[in-house]
Image (cartoon, rainbow, N blue to C red; front, side, top):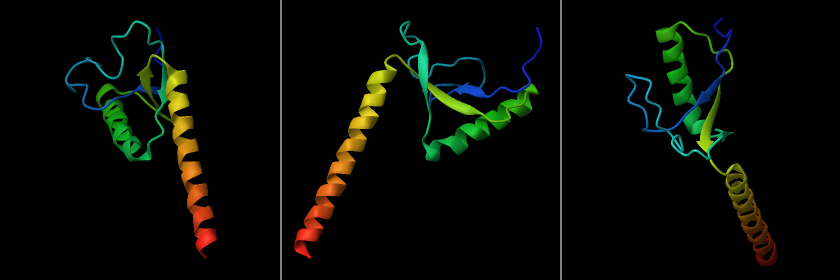
Length: 105
């Protein structure tokens, strides 16, 4: 079995690994219905996960050219709907605030 040229897909989570062994316990790892994940888009966490990838590159002699981080989730559609609903909420709040500002000025 040939090693991969680049290990670019990483399942991530916070506070769920010991760091000493292969004991990934992040997200819905033990949910038999969780067969997919969503890409992590939070910039405030990405640099820490990138640091962990660099440590893995050094420890195991692997290469990760462009690492992408994913977290396990059973119902990705519900998660995406939650993101959409949050977006609509902030859009409407912004519109109403702007409308109120225009009425007062």
